[in-house]
Length: 88
Image (cartoon, rainbow, N blue to C red):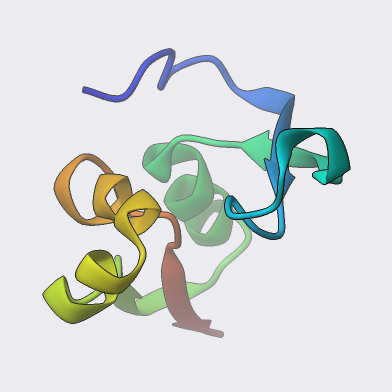
């Protein structure tokens, strides 16, 4: 289940380049993301006159998840990306 799906707006998350690094040497990064619901994205496009041509929610392959288990959430819970193709 995706938590707080209907709460739109900015949120921060932390990540690192490698989980193998020793914890005291590990460099953590903080990034800012902006969440919107699927309805918000699609309705905004439609309201300004775009026509939706294609929508994709890609997920990592099983092989990619085996190689990097942290990707499993994007395969089993919710996609990390949304691709919309729209035109006037």
